Image (cartoon, rainbow, N blue to C red):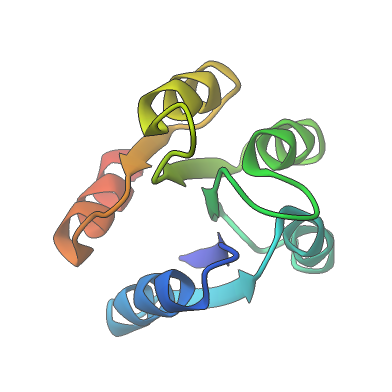
Length: 120
């Protein structure tokens, strides 16, 4: 599967990309929503987007809404460690706006891979 991973935290992004690459997925990565949407436009073969919700430049909720408009068939995993209001509020909003799966940070490699199987 061709997967785009968007997260402003380099360590989290590396963990996700490494986990997915080990499972033989083709992974693209971006450090914010703005770059992620540009990569999505450049790589129409992307089938799944894994995005953080709280990021600089363009946050994840906005990224999900724009990605849904341009790529309605795209599968989306939204993830959040929260912020001032806690991750649940952001994840509920992401779910309402079109995320297929939500993950609360921190999560394990196994939880990430299970979320992908849910969408197959």
